[in-house]
Image 1 (cartoon, rainbow, N blue to C red):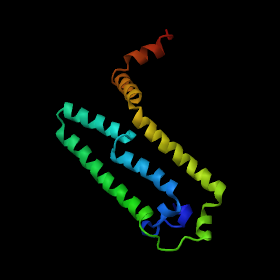
Image 2 (tube, helix red, strand yellow; image 1 turned 90 degrees about the vertical axis):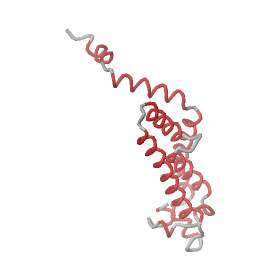
Image 3 (cartoon, helix red, strand yellow; image 1 turned 60 degrees about the vertical axis):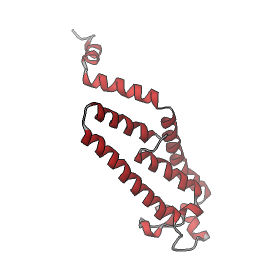
Image 4 (cartoon, rainbow, N blue to C red; image 1 turned 180 degrees about the horizontal axis):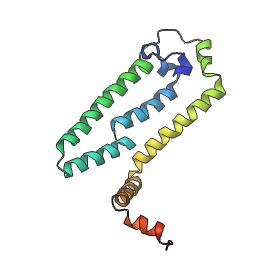
Amino acid sequence: MHRLRGTYQLESLGGLYRAYPALAVLFLIPALSLAGIPPLSGFWAKLSLIQAALNAQEYVIAGTALAVGVLTLFSMTKIWAEAFWKESAEAEDSEQAGRAGGRGSWAVMLLPIALLAALTVTIGLAAEPILVLSARAAEELLNPANYVHIVLEGLP
């Protein structure tokens, strides 16, 4: 956003949705994922945390995770509304659009954001293999004897 508008000031960024709709959507996907909105990847992580907390009867942790999700949703929507939705303080002109460095560099900037947003959606829609892998990794971390045996097996 700084390259597009030349400022880090959120209140000076308005109007990005109209000028850059793809960027607006690509910002919103990870922002909603951070808040734990289904079906994005952050939802499954938050759901797993809350289920584990409830199973362990750690209600403060479960409540804190839910409260953090609500506060994150509030802050992300506030940022999105301020930078993308509200009207721009300055008119969109060719000089401003050119701050991104031209069409080629705009695509180069957008590509990693698009890939990460696609990964967020993909993980959200196919979360089970990731959760199974994570559970297996957690088991190995809690009981490293098998790993130690495999690594040290060849030593005298």
